[in-house]
Length: 144
Image 1 (cartoon, helix red, strand yellow):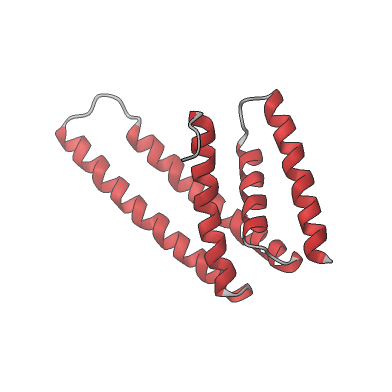
Image 2: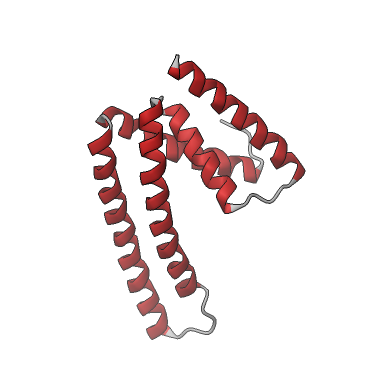
């Protein structure tokens, strides 16, 4: 019963987001994050409790990731660089990439404490799938 309810809510949410997207081609960060979370919840077949736990942990992880991504953007978009500055930018980016992986690992471990590993695994796969679908959609390339 709960799964049916979640499925119906998910479908309604996806229809609502699809209709609002057609009106406004630009996707807000909040809207994108909501779509991503909903997609993962549906693909991983979370129960209502798992979905609630996931949303809290996932939102916290995304907020921390966003800070690192913004710092990366600042590093890469500085004009007029010499060899020394480029080398330092590369080192900083490598360091931030490692920070992101450590952050992912930390939050995957948090998720493993509140749900089965098989569902965390499905969630990780679903997140990658969502990103690929969105990139394909934005580039208007047909699915292979």
